[in-house]
Length: 279
Length: 344
Image (cartoon, rainbow over all chains, first blue to last red; front, side):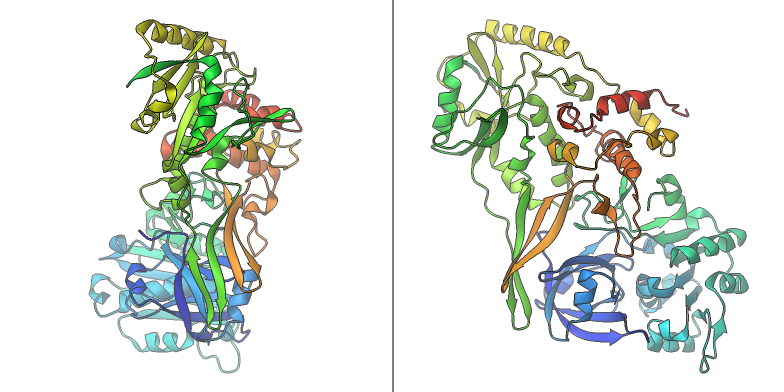
């Protein structure tokens, strides 16, 4: 059996700078041992521990979809020791990834329903995984209407710009991209995510909202969805905590009796209500 | 299983004999303290001890342990796991509360999903010989309040009970029975067992310190925000002594150490009492003050572990009570919690 503390060796295959500020990059990893890709079978919403020699590890949500074969992607903001080292890496370097860890977006629960995906800023990564998963030709018919509301502070801070453009051409997806403030070239929506949610007003009928973003966005977005009649069971989000082991043993990421690494990171609001508000 | 009798003065000899075939951990006196430590050639085990200063969890979960090794290569790094084959070991003469702690730690490290091979390898290769407490070691002992007994085979492979001139030797598990050859030929009769039961009952009676550990779970369920938590931490120095001495505290850190082109990833004991334990890169800390950290420690022992594994994560050894530099007493905390409203 695989020792869960030992990473799989991966090679940094491609590095994409996502934003104008250059502090958010997507790292595409290929497994050094091709058979490891099967062992790393993941579901959207799960995360991995990125592992760098001499620096340590950092838990990051998986940004690619399992429908994208041959590699796995993580979008990482440069912030601490490990992510700074990662940002300085060159393509071709060998490092490690552990996982996949945690639960996932509840795909079985989402199947057959209308899905509203709401993302803000840099927290769009595992939502992107979910969207690409649902849009894949093998999966699209398992889900009802898909509405995406995604916002960033300005156009330069939007992630996955090429993909957003592709999604915008599709007829089976209601895409709403917004920025707090546009620039000279911006032709899209302007406004905060909660306001756009209100404007788009997705129906609560047979619908689930999957919401991920900075705390301030969440705080103002939730009331909009309550007003639209979404129940707490049908609002789903993902938590972040400081982590080390990622497998519920090192003792730091618990919220009440649940370990965010093992029992989360994905929880419905109904589940969160039962936990202590310590995150 | 079989029971035998050995003369009291034979115990040291047996432990020393075992060192010929095994790595033996036993109580050893160092200056004024007794530690459970590897028994060297020149060491004399010290069995007339009360309890060891350290909890013996470090036998399975060392203070610091290498998890993997790295080498820097031209392309980045190469690495390999470092689960060492554990030495065949004997933990000779631990107290029943500490043996009980192993059962609790097993629940965490040996779960169905995510097995901790580092812990399990050492645990599986170690035979636990418990030395019953025929008289309570300390007035701060409260094992009987947290599912323990001063004479108990919980977590033991062999149980030794002082029944006067002899020790009654009970082989509890096949792993314990495999060591039968070290314990002489004298079979114990029914009277020896009757004597042991008598002693066990008296020893249990003699534990005077009691806490309502089982009563507080429903109270903790509904009192996360009680003002009670504003007070208990006030004198805490955040030194972490309670967590380091605790037989059931299992939190750890994982860090990297590099020398030249080689490096190791190690894990070391960590503590929920430390401010950095939960501090995130952004600066946000979900447990920003000692208040939240004390609530976490208390809840973890008496609520969260019960929710997760249906067991209280405290064995009543009293080390945290004895060694806290500012006399924070978990017994008093539990007692006070039991007086809060349960809300039901």
